[in-house]
Image (cartoon, protein in one colour):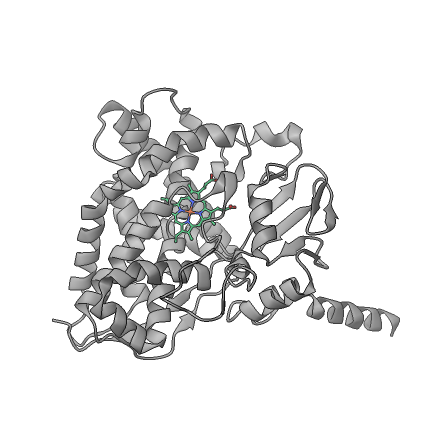
Length: 402
Ligand code: HEM
């Protein structure tokens, strides 16, 4: 009896905890009321699972920018032992060295040159819309697009490209956590196969460089990147820009189609596409949270976070913080200020932001100009998980298909 009562009390305790409810309850359907609840409890709260959590813009931004917080939770003496980590998982100085190396390739100026390749991929996908005009906006458009773009940009040969896309999807689906043992096995297989594809490609591009991102990286002037860092770097470029961009496109189109007057407005004035994409990043961000580990004792939001403790920054909550945005729960194309942390902040600020924004803008602009009458035609289905937010399926219909 006592054990059952203790379990019941513990269960009730978990059910009251907003972070537990995010994972156990309706978090993947609609996490925003839970973020509001976290914010109402204070700028920084301690979850029963041990982590500190914040949904306010100010505290999340401070944590992401403050050098006293890092990403690597391993003890200092074990840090050098895992060479296969990507720089997303590393702290300075390794992080700084690798990040500096890749930045020029993804600068806004360099990325603007990718426009024709992105437009070609988008054009091909739009041509493939079936004659009856009904298709899945995610499976038939938003999902194949970023993977096809990054495959071309990395210079993956056509022969490997389908296989590569499949592995990219396996990685993407694992971002929110593994779903089964089979899923874990698939991920392991994808990892070793991708490693072989990249090793082979890197060797070939070193011998005979082309006009692709890998060639640019291996022939970059100045300090050369070590061979062991190159595979995790290429894998990061593949994964980081896949599910995130898919869901930015999906969430933008969904937000606009849910209010058909907005879709019509954007169709009449395609210069509004930029605002629609930026508002989606604030309102319904594809990456909902990240975390940092305190490398020293830090005073934060009126509490003391001690060295080694973790702080979860609810990025999706920061974009809806009424302290920084007016009427945060309204999707509004006419906002002037749109503070959000959708691409993080500080040392790990997303390297791929210019590419992601260019891809999403071209994808939405071409879709709305080709199909100004597009409408939702069935029940949208959410992808599982609470880290990446988006739709698995969005059935749509147009009467303008060929
Ligand atoms: C890092 C979001 C697209 C490459 C990040 C982080 C976020 C993010 C939140 C930082 C995580 C943290 O602070 O812990 C997004 C979103 C995207 C997107 C919302 C699309 C809508 C891309 C693309 C690429 C890319 C297209 C590249 C091809 C990276 C890389 C990092 C990163 C390399 C690691 C940066 C570092 O650790 O210094 N991204 N990303 N991302 N992103 Fe993106």
